[in-house]
Length: 375
Image (cartoon, rainbow, N blue to C red; front, side, top):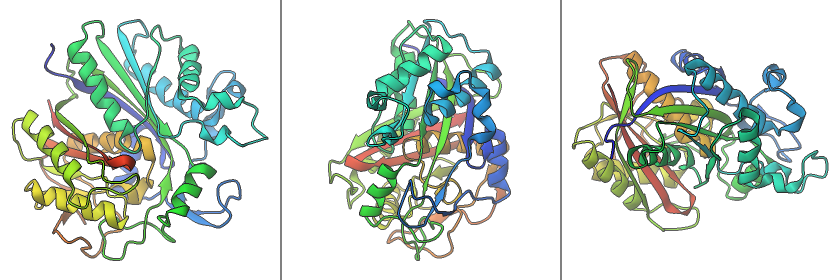
């Protein structure tokens, strides 16, 4: 077993722009991608969401017409990461594709140029594999809104225990679709304005879309971060509602913290969907873990909830916080709104940072926590 696994590269394409550094700078400047969206293909009424304009990048994908929108975006973010780090595509490179819904927008769409079987995640993965010529088949992972973060954990485990692999690429993405919007609309979970995670006056979430890729290795680089500990637990409380006691997240944090050596993180990048049950559950789990005083933010007020991409996206932004020694405020927060106190970051602040905790939760009761530290 190889003990240490590092994240040595990352790339993001979101409604805030292309590139991890650009996206982090937009956060530093206080920009949010959430805006009114009027699109009859998504919803019969206006919604607030973070939607991406992929037109500027469409021409960068060879034979673009052969790929769905989400596949094109995934190809773009992977190409940027591969080119930046000169990543070999041989059989020693593990590739994991994580998504919640993938090409689900193809289903029930008579105008689609693609067969409905392209909605199968394995079909999407194979299209991307053929584009790049990866020697290994892409592993696919879909576990609700912890998909991206869980994919990092799976890649780490395979790098530690399977000597076949020397490196791993984890890519994740989700896009807005009528299926996704109608589902959250039916739950009455969509806010009628910009979302306000952990705030007293929150009214629900905003959806978003993004594609993200990270590069993992057992060999550190000068600018790498180490995955110190990971914990994942399913509380099996409800098909869509989290445990009211935060049990699954509590157990996940305890496991990640124990593996990391029982250190206290410098900040927490929370899931923070701005829905009453999620925010309350997280506050209880953090209190049970003795973390209520740790500076905490949610990035959903900038990007919206990007579903399976959210764990990856928010991990990457937290990594850039570490590297820049800077805390990013939780956009939309003004008044405490949970039963347990939280130290929500309200102002951008420069201070020495070494370690952060990333949490994520999802439908079906899934939870994950990761402790990550500068090398």
